[in-house]
Amino acid sequence: MMRMLIIKSDTDVQALSDQLFKAKLSGAQSEAALARLQSLNPHADLTKLRPGTVLLVPDAPTFKVSASDPVHGNAFNDFQKLVRDYLNQAATNMKAGNRARAEERDEVSAALKTSAVKRAADSDPELMSQVKEATASFKQDQQQDKGA
Image 1 (cartoon, rainbow, N blue to C red):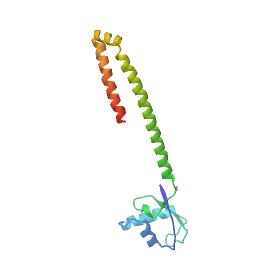
Image 2: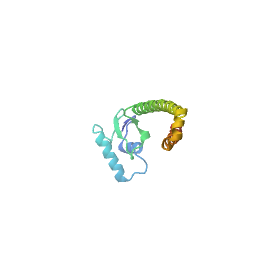
Image 3: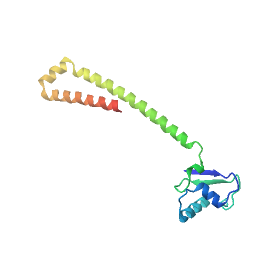
Image 4: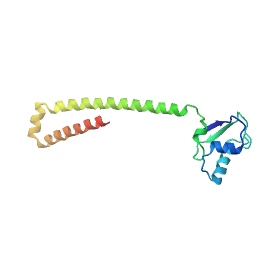
């Protein structure tokens, strides 16, 4: 992301460096940062900046974020709101899906408890095993839905 700095008073390269660069840069890092700043701002003479000059500042580890403003204004806030809205919608959809699955589980559980199914399961060990597995699976699903 790009940032921007509007020069407020006559500024030379040393004052600009003090304002924009992090304190513990080596000479080589400082020179590289100045070169990068100059390449983004070919319109500006970094040795003598006048009030009102607008500089594009890279969002890089060598530059202080607090010294400049985001170029896109409220773009991050807009993005944050968009993500929050989508997450809220996803949570609403998930809750609705969980309710629908809970209703289906209740219907199947009620059917499994009918006397006809109980008689059939009592006479068929494999069916009895399937009913027990389904009941256990429903309980697990219910716990997962609560956790979600």
